[in-house]
Length: 137
Image 1 (cartoon, helix red, strand yellow):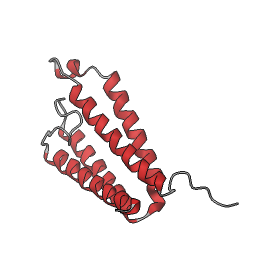
Image 2: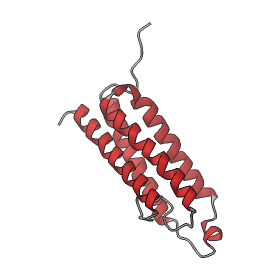
Image 3: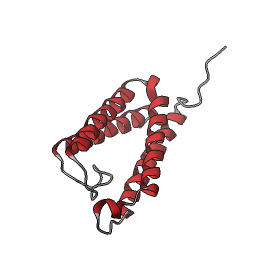
């Protein structure tokens, strides 16, 4: 399979994943993998906001599968999101929020998997010359 096809279908898989995240948050099903912080108390308005944003990510990934023009901003936004998740996980006392001991291993596993997905996309984007391409003067 060509690099372009692998990147395209990997981005489409991301679009489907984020659509599932959006649906899970919209209906409030706290499913590990679709809710990063699945065992942390949340309010419906928070889940609704995340649902709308996840739908936007789904559209962003779908658009990325159709055109190479947005691969750089898509990957940069994904990197910022992962750094944000790392910061939240390191700086939040989840046990205090839940008022019970809250393990974070599953949070880290999900962050690692999202990071590996970002590296996967970046590898194929680089192989296609989409990340380091310079415009002629």
